Image 1: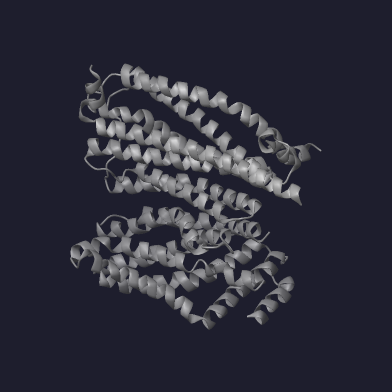
Image 2: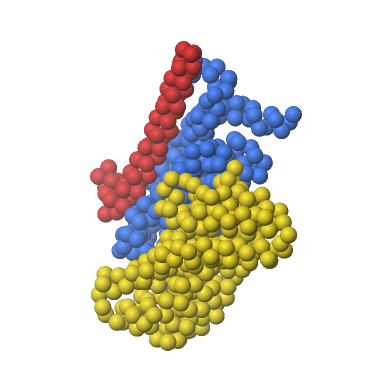
Length: 55
Length: 238
Length: 245
């Protein structure tokens, strides 16, 4: 089976790769959002602590 | 309004459970009668939504007859969402709700009274006007009677499930839209059995299973929702 | 003092523990995902009736199973938080909700892409697809309610009540939708082959395991941020290495 045939999926390529592509995409977005949230939370905590120290 | 609230607070300690239940209903009805526009708004909304459908999909009688139960039910669902925001908010703002939470009687019973009052103000008018709207859709007489029956069984469930949503979103910003988002998915079984019964009578089948299931849902809701709503109110008032 | 330990230091201890556990779930999840994909695409044979289109099940079925399972776990955690007042379980419920909604979305999306070649329509009002859609609505309601309440304690408890009411309703909704579907004789997406090939079962099982491990890893990562946010005024948060630097 050639790679081209494999990606064509016997004519169902759009449906099969559309499913897996979007699933992986949204999972990737979720991972990015969770990491972003952690960065933001940590930054905010540092800012709050610095503000507290100045007082 | 304040006089009314004080009266409730002072008298409760001597009242029996059912006396209190009646008092809550009477008070809510009295307050609503002083602001009749609110009740009418729900009703007008219901009539308007139902009347928009033929304009949207065309005047073919066959199709309209087929859609009628679904259209009436969806409109009833939306109309009952409309008035949910008012269920507890006035009492919350003037402090009556706090008194109710502190009352020695069961909060569930008080909540049930409020639910019944809400149904009489927003559910019952819909049941009464629905046959007229059914005529707009050329529903046969038999189907109209079934429609009234299932609406009578179903609209109280909408008020009860709605009460949970109203209690959870008490005092929140954008509570009106939020409450629909929470409550509408939970109302889907009512919609399915309610329209199913009318469709059954139209196709000459028995309506018994639909009505029986709707009745079962009503009993379930009657047992659980007042208590759940009472818990939700306690959470929201903390 | 046992209760106090439970109440006050559980998030403290759990924050560090979760951080150590994440790689132990994330790495196997990635490995199993690749193994599952390999078996699903190279070992499992072509289906006689559905040809290659059936290969969507390796993501569709695990996503559907997990979306329902996560709702139950979420409601369970929320109920624990409500009844025993354990803050960490409420935080876990909050952390699970977005992932549950995500899997419900994946299930719907892949279901639509599977339905189009098989039934000629992107969306059929099949009992399972419809229930999945309602499940997504329930997740969105939970998230919307929690995010519109500012007081975290009230958000936890209100969300818990909604999740419990929702989980009681899920079977009622499912059976009523199923009944409605049979009345209207709608289409049902079924695996039409007489029996599934062993490699297909293996691939599906491995993918389910991979997704499950992923859910655990991403929930732990999310709950760490929630813990930091909620405990921002405590000593231990300010003494953390990542906050001090």
